Image (cartoon, rainbow, N blue to C red; front, side, top):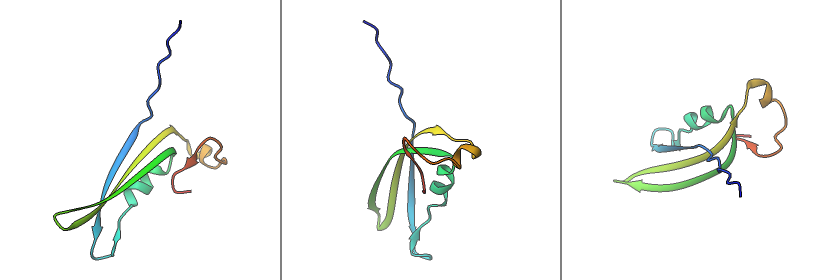
Length: 82
C-alpha cells in the first residue's frame, strides 16, 4: 500500500480594525494580497475588543498566478476580488 501525503494549502489571516474616520474596514492589504492568488476558501469573523470593532479574514489559497495567467478565466477556483 502506497501512502500519499496531503498537501496543505497555505492560509493567510488578516485582522482589520474599523475606521471611525471613514466608517469602514480598510481592506487594501487583503485586496493587494489577493491580486495574484487563486482563492479556495474565505472565512470571516466579526468581533469587538475593548469597544473597537474588528473583522478577521482567513484566506485559504493555492496557486500563485503570474500576470499573464490572471487574464485567463478561472476554472477550478475563483480569483480573490473577482
